[in-house]
Length: 90
Image 1: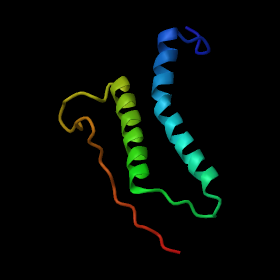
Image 2 (image 1 turned 30 degrees about the vertical axis):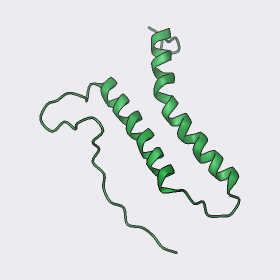
Image 3 (image 1 turned 45 degrees about the vertical axis):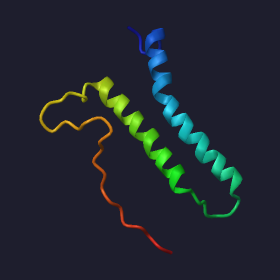
Image 4 (image 1 turned 60 degrees about the vertical axis):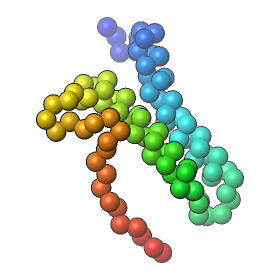
């Protein structure tokens, strides 16, 4: 099958997966538009919403790719390995 031709089911699945990223993009775009200063401030709630949307996207992709099994070392739904990143203060 040609890569350029996708079935309606694949198209719907892709749209559903990208919906999480569209929400994030719109939220960030709204904040950039609303805050005209060089620095953008996000509330804790907004950051939690961004994280939840990313988690849902990652879980959906992992499930689709077959990584969602309950084998040894598999992560439970909603569980992501997060590494701390040092904050940089200017």
